[in-house]
Image (cartoon, rainbow, N blue to C red; front, top):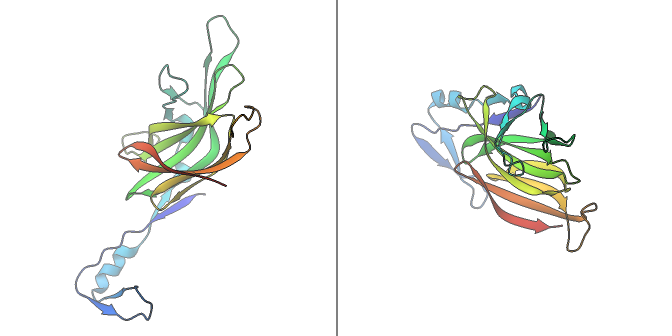
Length: 197
């Protein structure tokens, strides 16, 4: 099970400075013992989120939002053809706190009936109005036939480690490993930094 702990720290009453012996580090003694009850972690069972039927806003399949069934969506790529559009959730999922609110990030793939497999990073915002408990508010295209290795939430950013295409590399064989950092601004994903390994 995936558990995320959200810590809410509230200091009430008087607090006195304690010398720690560590330069630049401050510690405070809490004199109001009742405030300690507020340090309990709120446990969020993100594994209970029903992402398998979430509505997903694909930047690749632009006809409209798609609602997944058991983690995927299928539609005819064109009239009178057996080719299908397929949108699928991958196992790359992360949940945590960004700018004080609970968010999730998942990677989905979309194929349009051709050779391309497009990877997208989807932002999820915790929502009491959604049956699934999460709403997809934005997606960002990561690339065609890339390899996503990991997702993380750290320092108020969503971090993606992936292998993409270097200059003049064929679409089949990306070799350039990069790390991308995304900020959450409102309900949108904004890439703020990109580094190469």
